[in-house]
Length: 118
Image 1: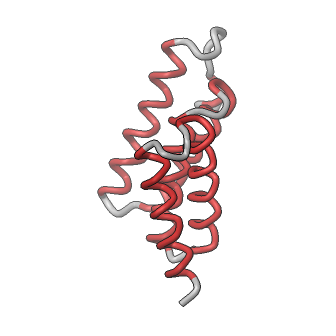
Image 2: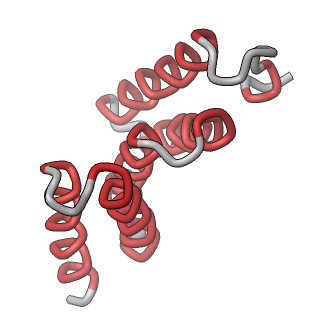
């Protein structure tokens, strides 16, 4: 049984939040170790669980931004742009276009698009 199918009966409860946090921490550690494929898998699981339990939220945008960074490390710039574009839209819709996270994400997206066109 996979981690996503072991979700608790109380969607959005503390156990789900802890599972998402654990997946993100593990994926971040994998990134730090240079295990980008493992990190990508961990962030994808965190993204899926976050979407199922919490819907569109800031944590979802953060996961997508992290996934974008990993795709960039792997040289898959089109996937990196796609993920960062989704993260930026989420940040803007939830936090507003002038929030520092939305501004930072938008600037990163512009830079990524420029580097992907070279």
